[in-house]
Image 1 (cartoon, rainbow, N blue to C red):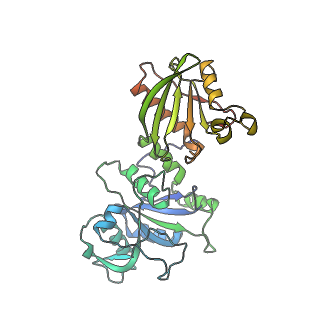
Image 2 (cartoon, helix red, strand yellow):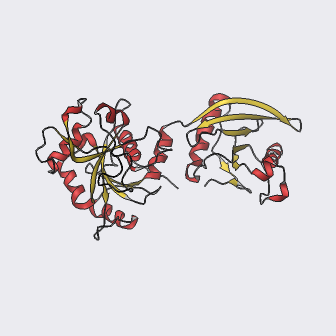
Image 3 (spheres, rainbow, N blue to C red):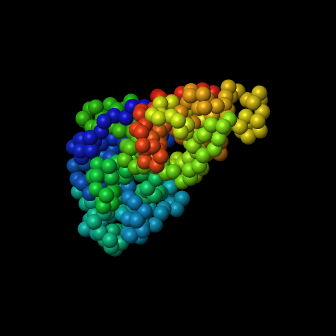
Length: 339
């Protein structure tokens, strides 16, 4: 997937944008930055989104304001967000339902440290982000907070956002085509959660070399790196031909339990196993093999180019004096190609 070129200041046209969850729920949301909430924007959400209006907050804000999570039952179905707290209104609210008062509540969530400044229950439903790792929790809560952080571009900023589900004319969850039509009708930018994840990967270094060694195969040296990453608790093992500079050909290879561990090469569909790929490296057909254990979480193919670029930077910093050029990845057997 080719990531669109999002300008930090143009993502929010007229202070709102649309986030489409293409990772799990296939749901569209109108989204704004909490600090900038206005009555007009809240009214737009209520009129054109038609869903509940949530305020997405960090765990630190939830603890500071002493916002307890809602328990299942209490009038909410099993499909309700499991990270929702008790609803709130700001202390100056009367009924709390007007767009002015709801916008006031949203803005003040990040402006006060006193839990007594909010009435409970109210008309704004806080959703609490599960930590800072968007790769492990790619929900609308984490994605909208990450997008707010990206737009503000301030390391000291504690982001909040507010979102509203987009329903169609029949009152059902709008599909992607209907969400895109709403964006076009009102001149709003639409960004997918997968694209926010790519922004996150570009903005953050999620790879770290934790161990480095070398060994000989058929009397030829190979460098081996253990690389920690945020996709899975299981590190990657990266085999690198020390004679390859610049690196041009790499593969991702996922462990085959039959061929790699048991050595039963004729009992699986893999045309080549790890040892075969390492021999290819020695023959000059490959420069690097990125080996993923079978018990590790799979890495989405959309992110592999970004992972390779970060590995390239790590190798330049740790081991290489010659520049490593852009990488072409080969697909063979269980090896996974990157486009």
